[in-house]
Amino acid sequence: MSLSPSFVAKSFEDLPGWGDDDHPSAFEVFRRSAFHVLSKPYRSGALGVDFGAFAEAYAEARSVSSLNGAQARTFFERHFVPMLVRAETGLVTGFYEPQVEASPVRTEHFSVPLMSRPADLVDVGDANRPDGMDPYLAFARRTVDGLAEYFDRGAIERGALAGQGLEIAWLADKVDAFFIHVQGAARLAMTDGRLCRVTYAAKSGQRFTGPGKILSELGEIPLAEVTMQSIRAWFKAHPDRVDEILWQNRSYIFFREAAVDDAGLGPIAAAKVPLTPGRSIAVDRLLHTFGTPFYIDAPTLTAFDKRPFRRLMIAQDTGSAITGPARGDLFAGSGDAAGEIAGVVRNAADFFALVPRPLIGGAR
Image 1: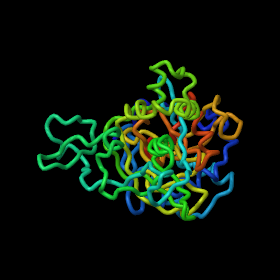
Image 2: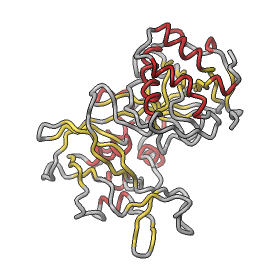
Image 3: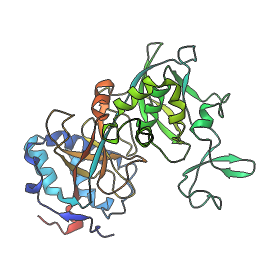
Image 4: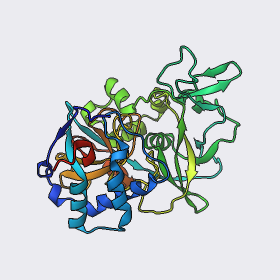
């Protein structure tokens, strides 16, 4: 496997603000991935960052419990070479873990379910995909006549899965539930006093169509003004049109219950480690390798700390809307404050992948 020409070698001096970053925080996040790979290695991405080349860096990360600022900076500079990810336009958005009130049982107030994976939902790949089935679909429905496309959002919300006991919890608001689907996880403040978490288990398989895109195309919200906040405000002002818009997004997400072991960390995501606010990034997993450090330079993004966003992030998640070599989703944390940050992030950015030195001959 060779490195893609999408990567252009740079030096650490080329990274704006590199010396001012909090390298120990990034090291701690990198170290979590270093321990996870002992049980299951990450798949190498198509751009040529081979997972095996991380072995030395991972081994050293596991050997120490923490590093100070100078030590952590030296660690990354010793093991990696920054490579600009060549792209017409780099883009970062934000995601977070919502926290909402929920009930363990349906009531008049709490009537919108979050559902677990149905028994008839089947993973689909090249080996079992029926002739003629959309190659995009990664999930299907098992029927007596074979596999078929699964029920979409509209069908499920109209009752296609009713009576199967799939409901994990019940929410008061359909829009809250939809944004939990978008984020893929949530903390639930249960009416019985428990704090629990739901996280992604599977999906119906159809393509995601964002409400912001739909509302922009309808002339309801100018594209430049589309944020999570503006979408929520539109739904609040037009409650009679919520289903009309949301059912155009045919994708439906199923969840599983998970513990909240550390309130300071997010859910366990695609890379099988808990996400860290401000340090975990979702990338295109087909192109990139989980565990790769990315230095993100987004000078117009100030929502995180009122300063230009220039941080070392670790690739620990992915998403259906995250496609392309210079496309990332920044994890902002959990709760309403994190949602206020994530909801406004849509900024141009330069992506610098920190590529293990063994892949480029140990260049300095």
